[in-house]
Length: 324
Ligand code: DGY
Image (tube, rainbow, N blue to C red; front, side, top):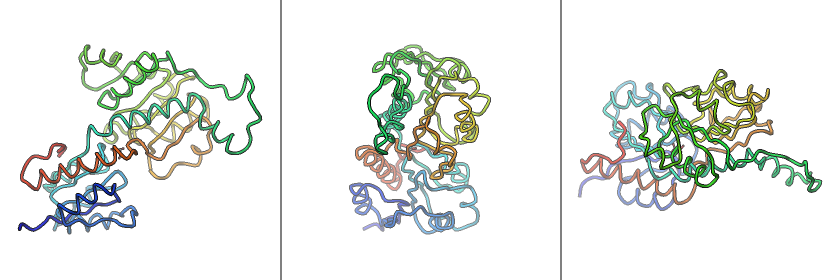
């Protein structure tokens, strides 16, 4: 019988997926589920046929430097892969796969939760009740912003952007405008009740809620900076379920503190898991610990996608979700 490939799973995955991995491969699991540092990841690239990283692992070019790379494939658990230096992986002949499609709905659901929570002050309200500080119903208590019928602006009209548009347009009667680097056909946009505009600024100036759905890293780093925040309406909200580095976090905090915009709902941060104290003390933000894909169904489906990608790769086929 052929020797099983040695694989390393960098964090704990759903049991059902770990079981399949253990059957098909000679699998090592990170039983303590503590994030691996760069030295440990560099060593893994030299010891395993496949490494299965996720967003909490950093794989910069320096990890690939030098000789002895054994890894043939990085089976990333997640759709975003800006934590991996793709050029360095390619240069060392390491294939990279991701897990698109299976987390679309759950990530859009979290974006919707953030939008509703920040507009209707659900975080603040919950904190008040838990603190035993609620003094009772009154007409002026914790007044928020109506969501139904407002304008949603989307940056990045891929799968998740479209799913967000669908929720907002068909569920909440919202007008939807979006910016996307490539042109989306009119009939495709119309399926989501959405209209494409030519610039990020146009979205920012028009929308009551701006939701980010573009990849992180590269030219999208600090796409939303102080200048662009100033283009948003003062009563608008910013929602980010994409990647923390798409927003200049310091500029956002300044904007929130000085009422340049009304609020923000954030599931991702620039230096996760660090969330700046200045952000944590603000009442006009809702902060989640990167929960976009965190449902049993989705996390299992993500893991099974990695299994499919690895199996295809080691069978000599093109993995369905190869990105490099
Ligand atoms: C993704 O898949 O990119 C999510 O952010 C979880 O990592």
